[in-house]
Image (cartoon, rainbow, N blue to C red; front, side, top):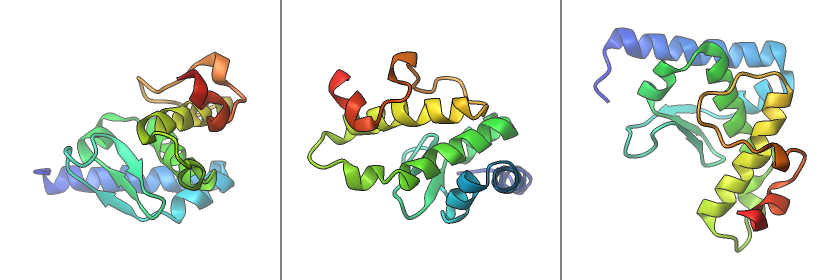
Length: 139
């Protein structure tokens, strides 16, 4: 990952601060995030943030580009995949399409909470208040 120690420390501090602020400002989301250990990965593994329901994986250069508020958003977003049991609900659906439907279901929830999203999130006002199962056929 070739990050300087200083940069790696700044990223770790930002992640810690984002988790702490989630606990204080949004206890449910914060509790979900705190149950996911954080693991830095290279860009080939993940170029942003991801979860497998056991841990949260992040590409340090991506986190470095985000504000603290945006970091809170992406941590909460990944934790909600776990909290909403998206992994268990996929059934026989195509993984890539299911993941997109889940993102469209999660992002309006976080935006309605007043959270600050990073640029480029999947959002469609027409999917607000819909579940991933309801969104999936439209994709």
